[in-house]
Length: 413
Image (cartoon, rainbow, N blue to C red; front, top):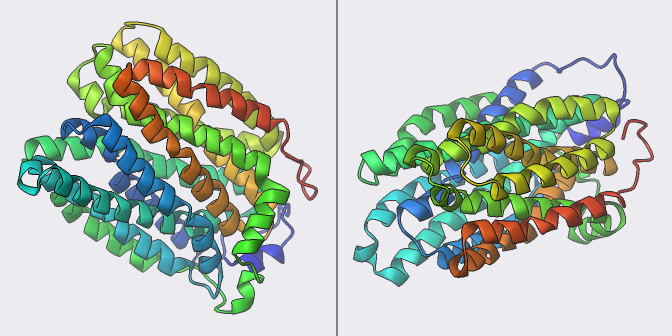
């Protein structure tokens, strides 16, 4: 379904068919592709630990790669909305993201390449991976949110939730193959390629190949829209993504310092944290469509602050208890993003891909500065101390939430 088609249908119409012919197949392809993109792209935190990389350098590499590529997301959103090209960006983004699976052989052969050479190769592979993710997310999230306009929060939450399922499994899959197959992580692509073929066959959205579809949007318009309509929400998501990235980046070190078993340190704890997002964000999206997106976003931030500090400060909980705490914390932290993206799409009606690009790409780009900052702090203190400091930004996000304007065209947010 195109942006133009969405605009021609009343956003709150309950008579609108759930999916137009062929749209359900495309939506399923988007879910599969998102699970793969996040699975193939989520390896870096556990890879840097298993390859015994310096935390400062690993954080700097990740920050540069994320900052430069994610800043391009609004442009990818604009280009994808022009001339019905969203399918092309989705497929190419998925393909580029798979470059991350080539990191394994570099990690186990660092001495062969030399320290500088190894870090340069790792940066190139991570940069390619992040570029693929940046290319994929704006058009894919835009298509998912456009499928049923009056259920936008629910559909965006389902889309992001399925992606988080792939994200949750990424470190466990990568670390298992890395450890048991002598670092030959490219074997993961053997299983991924048939799924990529399914995405290519299923993802065929109905789009008009006309330049008018872009609505004349250019980069200067994106900057203007950010300043006039999205600035407080953008700042909130910058803070939220920064804290979330820092938490995932240092989670293996935090869990190791707390004395938890190896399986939990090398992906199990991460799966619980991301699993909480999967469990919470879909019902939260449904509730947001009924109760109000701004209200639920504020409540979610308050609860996230409380549970985040409990997770760090409470020492030596039994593993099952801590796993539940991690599940709740990760769920609350991860739910802020889909709620914010859906609200931003509503604030920019007819420009869903652009709104997604700004609130996912530009927010993640600036928020990724937390990776090298948290890495440097952890190098000079502990992972727990670093995360305690980074958590302050969620309080700033709560303040900004109070300044988000109410969508004039909606009565539910």
